[in-house]
Length: 69
Image (cartoon, rainbow, N blue to C red; front, side):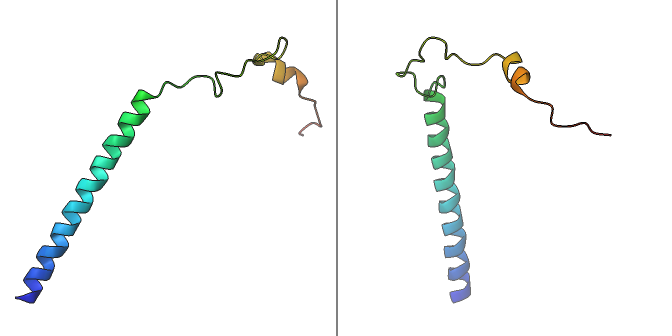
């Protein structure tokens, strides 16, 4: 009889844990959906001349360090 009660309690705890994890995931998804991703610090403005580099700028700054045979 004690074995059946133990199995029932374990099954109930698994079900409650599953429900809790499901609710936490739903809450986390709602927070992510409400947040608008953009600039990392929108209140901080970049000074003139310090904009985001274009894709060609990093390639132009790279130096050739050697050749591969």
